Length: 454
Ligand code: PLP
Image 1 (spheres, protein in one colour):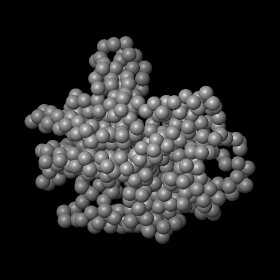
Image 2 (cartoon, protein in one colour; image 1 turned 180 degrees about the vertical axis):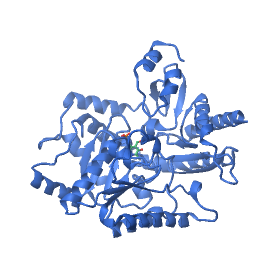
Image 3 (tube, protein in one colour; image 1 turned 60 degrees about the vertical axis):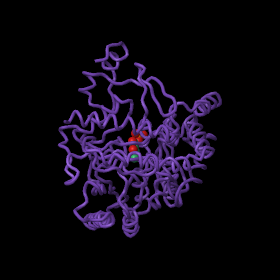
Image 4 (cartoon, protein in one colour; image 1 turned 180 degrees about the horizontal axis):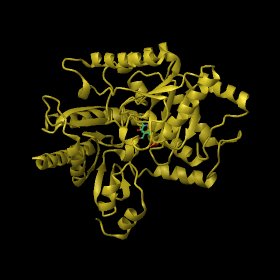
């Protein structure tokens, strides 16, 4: 246990999120004290490359002064106002206008919240409302994917396919949440099955589920273009091309959860662009403000907006809203973040450094612990395997992913183990030299884990 007052107070009073609280009670936590560029420094002065950009979000690194200045300026001008009761303020209007201009497909209106979970939760509420207002009250079920991740609220944790976030929370709640297979080609393809064949099998499973449940009971399908919390899993070839026509045919909305992929992560502004997705609703957060303020957005299409207006005619108002939804300081920081992305051509930068990132990590395919490496833009997953030839994973009880994560930590590299997949999503500003340093530290961590596994 780290024996200083801060660590003792942390153990005594903090409920850490997504943490083994038993281990925390014994060992405490690493407390991060400051950051610069792609690096963070802990309370004991150890410096790390933050190859997860925090939680897939600190796109501009940890020392972008322009964002601090934008927040301070807005705090002096108008530190708070809401968007209830036909009132509002310029930063939220300007940001909504900008997001609609940037959005893929035909999205026309924006709802603001503070987190990705709330963005998806709001999408769920709006979908149910929309189907009631358009006279389809039975069309309410939502389809998510095993290992998909859409948030922490009762509804979004139900929609997610993460068993550890449901067990003993009495989730999924109710009977409106359905799940289809995880399209993780490397892990689940059958011998001789191509990526396209695998995608066709996934699409057939979706269609069978819709037919079994009845299309008139299913409202929407939610998908992350690249699955983040499931392990940084890129979709197999043709997957979204095959899925979208099935949804269209059955009048099922496509919600693109761009909470991780949005704003350049995949080498395009949106993951939807990378994979040819035309969403009816798009949710985003995280890199929207480079994580310097909590802010999320739910972008909806005009027919959905028209249903919300019809709802106001029926009920007197749109009965939904958050005190801090569209907070002016968060929106001002969002506007400055998007301005920086444009001025610095952040998407161009991601494309320029992506080969160094993907090839650098790809080289680890030769490592005895690594079965597969896949990614796009600046997101990648490295899959650890007990036996590569037969694609046999390690027994989960051996916690090999956590071992690698810890050895990387000792080598000054923060990565995340999701089961036995090691996820990488560095800040978008990372340079080629920093990518080389990241790969060097990863090798140190992997070799140390390999040595310990003996
Ligand atoms: N959707 C996706 C794809 C995410 O990765 C996350 C968080 O990691 C969320 C939703 C939830 O966002 P938040 O933690 O801001 O509530």
